[in-house]
Amino acid sequence: MFKKLKQKSLQKQTEKNIRQRDISQINEPLKRLGFLVDESEFQDFEELYDFSAALGIQRKDVKVFSFLEYRKKLPTLQQNQIHNKDFSWNGEIHNLNAQEFLDEPLDVLIGFYKGSHEFLDLMVSASKAKFKVGVAKADPRLYDLIIEIQPQKVVEFREELKKYLQILNKI
Image (cartoon, rainbow, N blue to C red; front, side, top):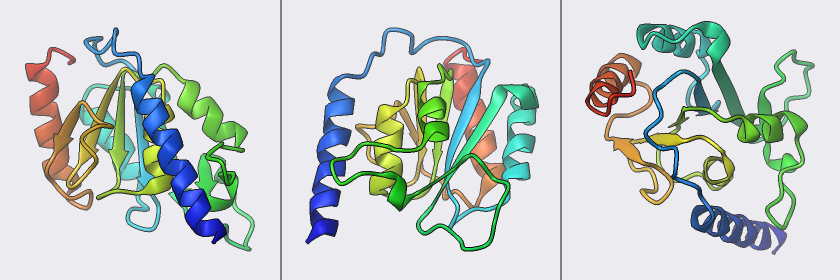
């Protein structure tokens, strides 16, 4: 019962964030890039840094944040990670690193996970990013651009994204 209540609250919060989104700076050029990743689908974050270097973005201007369903018992040094327990039953995020990431004024945010994901969708909707890019089967209300390529095909995705960013005069 609590799981259903939490899901409904996450959806309501996502809807609220979508309605309140500021799109006034959507055409800003790409200087700062962010990735939201489902760690159960993709773990090679170094490949994402290489991805951004191919777009002409320095490593210091790239932020990667990941979601992992359950916190591992083993200690980890990874700070840019959020878990399902970091979301309250009413859709609030109780993770300072995640909140800091969402408040960051990124020029482009890439939701690097496939399909709909209630926790990551909430984070995308709450992000202050100016331009949002999703992958195959993503919720079109959350993103300004959706590229129909699976997240595992990083090279193909990068080439398509680069093409669209050039067309939009972002790079």
